[in-house]
Length: 71
Image 1 (tube, one colour):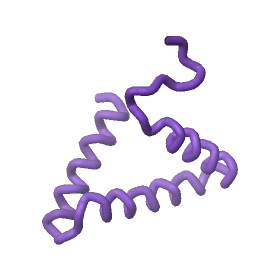
Image 2 (cartoon, rainbow, N blue to C red; image 1 turned 120 degrees about the vertical axis):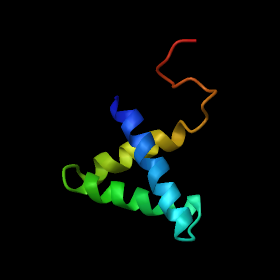
Image 3 (cartoon, helix red, strand yellow; image 1 turned 30 degrees about the vertical axis):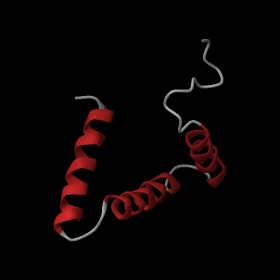
């Protein structure tokens, strides 16, 4: 199993548990993002984390190619 498939499975389990507890998907996603940032902080600089989050935010459109990709 790839790490991305594993992460997807963990996310689906977390969303199901959150729903059972009365929380919505967006609430759970926000809480998980906070936990991801906490893990990042253990081994990465704030600037590195900000750079990665900025890159992800700039590339939210799945239909658009990344700037470094050729058409």
